[in-house]
Length: 380
Image 1: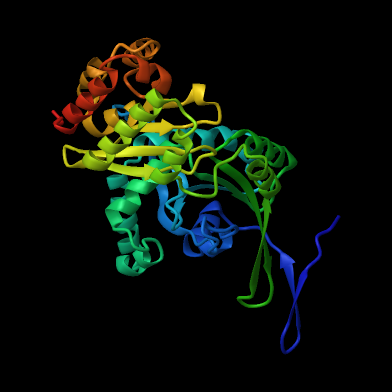
Image 2: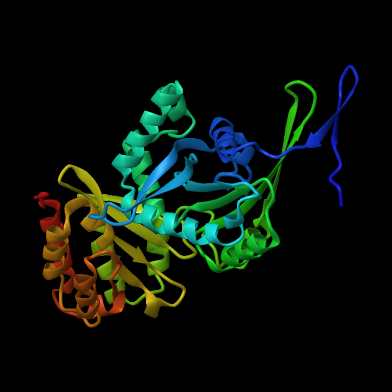
């Protein structure tokens, strides 16, 4: 079926005909200048979503010591600290059908590992300077009552948890890509995936009309309604305490000791998960380093404490991560997971059951001591 024009009514009737983008670079530049085109949905508190550009052609390393690099078309962020990764393709590019999906997943996985808060903040401020934007005005859209350091630490936390949006943008979205997007959106708990079809119409002179159509929103809505997606709220210490009331006394004591230590020594941050969950950042070598996440799940037998070895390695190096692992207690299951981490270079999230931690004498104190030693670590 032939696409119909759009009619602009002014002094006369101006027919705007469907028109392809001349180049992918033109398409990319348009989105960088006008991110409002991609502002669908809302923030956690109900405010309209407003994306702010962090960088165009954002570098994505593929390893801590590798020279191999990918380049993401656009990285945006919103006022909730949720990053949005955007890949742009024209319909004439055959990669829009399947190859772009693997490409985007590569970017998401490696960005989550190799985009620390300091790098994101520096990149954002350099982008503002290059575009002639006032950094102060740009931050006014994002920060609220937070400082820039707190905001970018939140963005890093979102990345580490897989809390992000992946957007495939094209002038025509093929059925194959729509099917993949909807499938991924149903399967991924923390990550939302969308395809945005942006149709351009041109008329006489400079008249242009851009019409975005979003695919994947139904799958996202279903994911949230069925409880398989993230919570719409950020969990607090009070929420953790309420969940602990249904646990045994040993589990409550262990969890509260961890939470009290976190409040005294570090910076606890509530997560947006389907269950009460809280992560802790501690100061080490002049940085705020994510160290552990405590999750209280629907089944109390699955409550766990997970250690963020990928972040520790990234911020402090493998030697510090190895020393931290050596300081952790020999709790059932944990040492086997740490052995795997040694082989893989300390990049994962080994965890220990809260129940196992609660019943083993001195295990909790060993963990707290290991954290305090980590806080004194220095990068060699």
